[in-house]
Amino acid sequence: MPIQRIVMLFIIGLFTSCSVFNPSVMLRTRKDFQFDQFSSTGPDSSYRISPNDILHVRILSNNGESLVSMTSNLNNSGTNTGQGTGQDGIQIQVEYDGTAKFPLIGRVDLRGKTRREAEDLLQEKYSYYRVDPFVTLRITNRKVIVFPGTGNNAQIVDFTGDNMSLLEALAKVGGISNTGKAKRIKLIRGDLKNPKVYKINLSTLEGMKEADLALQAGDIIYVDPYEDPAQLFNRNIAPYLTIFTTIATIVTSVALIISLTK
Image (cartoon, rainbow, N blue to C red; front, side):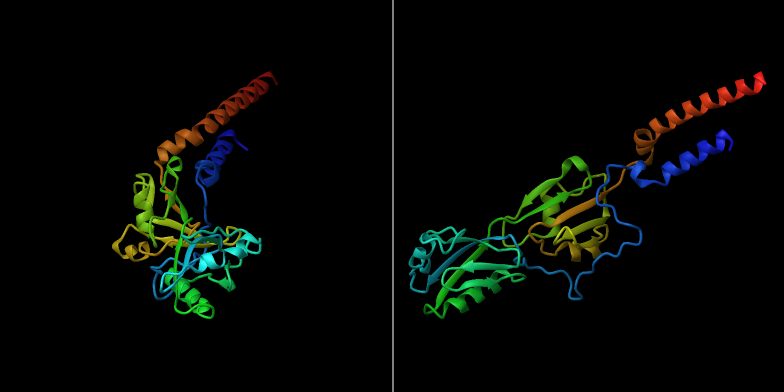
């Protein structure tokens, strides 16, 4: 095979291989990848409790009597391990199956419930033990990871209120970087072994509907990066091409010398 043809095939192979041409890009998806779809009613605007959330719960009666202080003996005896206590409330972790263990009422399934739905459910369950219980709940550990389109600008963002939208999270990291693709944003949610992956386009006003969705704790927001092809070539292809061209020149010279000596 002529040396020129080998060189040409080598160059074509480099350009058609994304992993070589731009090896720093993360979380690639195949061209035929099927992204998950939001529900027909549109993105949810309320945060929903998920496994590993940390809940700060105050359980009171309407006359101000603290149910937590009455049940603190449960915690002191070790039957309520892992739950912080105090007059200001208790701290409880939502476990892997979406349940959380509370004083008196035991385990309650909170997965997928909004804060208000969880408060109503707990008030209902505590009504068997106290008259007109009053429950307040807040989620304290919610974070998302944002890759705004440039690898060295990734940040972990804390929730500051009940809900945080995709647009708010991007704003907290300074917006989409000038090397990010606004039309190709991936939202990765759930178990990382089998996550749901949504594709969002913020390059149009139509995409703003999806930008209003409520983020969940542990969400990953990844803005696909764009880089100038000339810069990519100089950084990732040119060194290989120089080495290959040098080898090809040596091989050609050796072949020419051999042919002349015959």
